[in-house]
Length: 202
Length: 199
Ligand SMILES: [Zn+2]
Ligand SMILES: [Zn+2]
Image 1: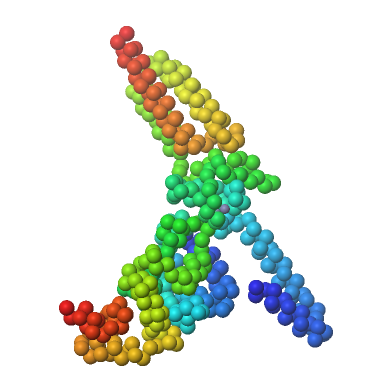
Image 2 (image 1 turned 45 degrees about the vertical axis):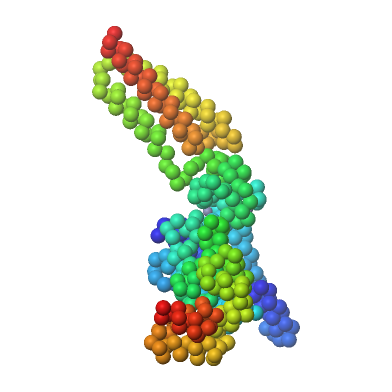
C-alpha cells in the first residue's frame, strides 16, 4: 500500500541525513496517529451507509450495520435476504444487537425506523369517533375502557413473547404485531357496535 | 436525492479518489452535476486483453434508493464485448441487477466492470452477435475488439486492413459508425456487409 512504501522511504532518507531525522520522525508519528484514528473509526462503520453505525447490529457472519439500514435492506428484498457484504443468509433474528457503554440498552431491532407506526393513533380516533356521537351516555365510556383493557394486554403479551425482544422495546411493534393489533381492534369495534345496538333496543 | 444516497455517494467519491487504483490510473470518477445523482466513470482496459491501452467512459446514474438498489451503469465509449451492447453500451452484469449488495461501492462496481472486460461470459450475452463471434471466430473477435479499442478508446492496435474496408463502405455513402459496426458483425467480410446494408 501507498502508506507503507512512503514509511520505508522516509526511513531511508533519515539514515542518510541525520540532521533531518527528528523532523521526519515527528512527521511520521503524526501520519501514523491520524491513520490509526481513521482506521479505528472505519472499524465501526455501517457497511450500508458507511457512517458510524447507529443502533448497531452484527450479523452471524460478523458484519456490522445500523439497524435502520439493515432493516431497509431486508425490506428491499424480502424473498432473498442475504448479507450485503458476504451474501450469507441473514434475517432479523440472525443478527445480534450491540450495546456499548453509554447506549440506551434498548434492543435496536424493536424499532422499525422507516415505517412510523400510525396504527395506534388511528385506533384511538376510531374509538373516539364512535363514542363521541353518543355524549351523555356514561355506559358507553365505561364499556370502552373495559374493552380496551384486554386489547392492550394482548399487545404487550405478544411483544414480550416475541423472541429476542427486550422488555424495554415493548413500545415498538413488529408488522406482525401491528396486524394482530388491527385484527383485535376490528373485533373490538364490532363487539362495541353490537353492544350499542343491544343497548338501543333494550 | 434521498439523504442516505447523497451522503454515501460523497463518501464513496472520496474513497475512490484516495484509492490506489486511481493512483495507478486504473479507474476514475468525476462529477457531472451538483446533485450527485449522475457521475462519470472511467476504467482502463485490463492488460493482456484486447482492451489494453484503451480508456472507457461510463455513465453512472445513482437512483433515489441507492444503496439499496444498484447504480445504473452503461458504457459511453463504444466497445466490442459479448456482455456489453455494441449499440447502446448497456451492460449485462449480475451485480448491476439481482446480485447487487448494499455494501458494494462505486469502486467495487468499476473494478467488477474491469474484471468483466478481462473475463467475458459469452453464454450470458448482452450482444448476441458479438457473443457468437466470440465463440465461433475467436481470433476475429480479438482483433475486432482491439480495433474498436483503438478507434474509440485510444488503444494502440488499429488494424489498417479493417479501416480500408470501412472507407470502402463510407465511399458508397454509408456512415462510418454503421459501416464499422456492420463489418464487425459480418467478420469483416465486405461483400456480406454490403449485402446487409443495401438489402
Ligand atoms: Zn448505516
Ligand atoms: Zn456477512
